[in-house]
Amino acid sequence: MGNPLYDTLFGRHADNPDVFLHLPDGSTVTYAAFLRITAQYAGALNTLGLAAGDRLAVQIAKSPHALAVYAACVQAGIVFLPLNTAYTPDEVQYFIENSGAGVVLCDDSKHAGLADVTHACGAHLSTLNNDGSGTFSDLAAAMPAQFETVPRDADDLAAFLYTSGTTGRSKGAMLTQANLLSNAQTLVKEWRFTAADVLLHALPIFHTHGLFVASNTTLLAGGSMIFLPAFTVDALVAHLPRATTLMGVPTFYTRLLDDPRFTKELVDHMRLFVSGSAPLLAETHVRFEARTGSRILERYGMTETNMNTSNPYDGERRAGTVGFPLPGTEVKITDSKGRELPQGEIGEIEVRGPNVFKGYWQMPEKTAEELRADGFFITGDLGQIDSDSYLHIVGRNKDLIISGGYNIYPKEIELLLDEATGVLESAVVGVPHPDFGETVIGVLVAETGATLDTDAILESLRASLARFKHPQRLITLPELPRNTMGKVQKNLLRDQFKDMFSAGA
Ligand code: MCA
Ligand code: AMP
Image (tube, rainbow, N blue to C red; front, side):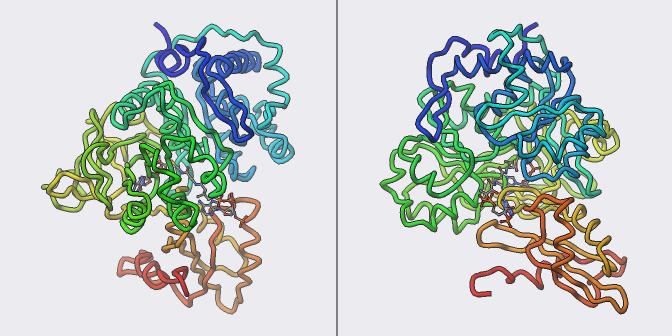
């Protein structure tokens, strides 16, 4: 029966001597070498007791080794569960418990913090560092460089990516082999990827964008990636001359544009710049074109759906829009009852296609709330289709903040703030930020007679909340604005504090 995702993305490269990864120190990793490591890792995962359908949670720094763990899971039929390296042990514990991951991989720096957590969950903890060392690699080194690929069906699970919700608790989006493969095939065609492409890869590989959109597309095309550990303007300026394509969140582009070394000459040879994960301001689009002569291609996706729409490769890349539905994906705009609205009206964006996930792990009621019986997924984004069929995202029906491409759900932060000494209640909102697009602020109401120590409150979040989710400011108000139903009017708070981070504020 084969293993469609492994065979198509990885297996056919087993003897490929071409370079897959260019590393910042000038060294390279060929496809064949990458797949030998992959096979050894697959063997080691089996030895640790993981079989097809079991979950592996990983919280490791980006490296070729980390990417090989993903490939190894696909080869062994194990469900890959990557975690943001900024998550605290408290946060990681939830993912291990909820997914039932039997094995957790982390780097040495996280071992002490995760030892108790994995012990409490009954999971095995092993280490893999970005230089390839660690207890997991020691085990893998003893494995043969070939592994018998585990047969999988297209509908079998390949990965869980956790995405939060209004309850504050994350849900494991179950992605199948077919979800990932179909999207990679579509993107290679739409964005014209070939073996000649060199993708400058500066995104993290624990989210859809860096892991699936960038890596799967390159693997399918047989191209290569300049694989940077993280984004910095210096590294991009240094490596852009050898690249043909770049995928980034809007913050990449605004930071590049703020640097005088980012010139037309530097990028004249580039064939494609893609932006996504957060809204690209029309102003950034225009500045980018004025500086480089190229137009950024903006696309729209989600953890649950991979990529849904894209501006055209040929044809007008329209600023402020996310383009057209990708081939095979349907997009409609609906009212609150799920009825399709006429073209031009604003409503909820719903999508259906082979890219749409299977549901949330062990949360049938949440799945039923968002995934209709006819296969349409209710995205929580608000949109409008213009007279030329371009999709505009005009807002969100979900309480979500996107900061530098990372999603932050206010409820999770509010629950912690509400517990802080002297706090009666809180509301967390996103406000415009020149670097991150949006950033988090917390509005607090004190208990009668209490004086709030906002520094101490911020400090108290450290143990439980990844740093990027921390409010940049805490503001105290006598009360929160509410409507007649008693619901907090976050729109009023967003409006009141919208200039807090604007230049000169
Ligand atoms: C880092 N920090 C942040 C963020 N990143 N704070 C708010 N928002 C952020 N995004 C904080 C750190 O905690 C730290 O705080 C300080 O900023 C500096 O950290 P550093 O690691 O140096 O940050 P950076 O290099 O400046 O990172 C900014 C970044 C990064 C390059 C924009 O956040 C990034 O790579 N974002 C991409 C996220 C992504 O891949 N999203 C795709 C999701 P302190 O100094 O106070 O300790 S997939 C998705 O959304 C869908 C499917 C889609 O459509 O793609
Ligand atoms: P996540 O669920 O973390 O994958 O984030 C998906 C969300 O990111 C979507 O529901 C949108 O709100 C947002 N998003 C992704 N791409 C874009 C884009 N190009 N423009 C605006 N929002 C985007």
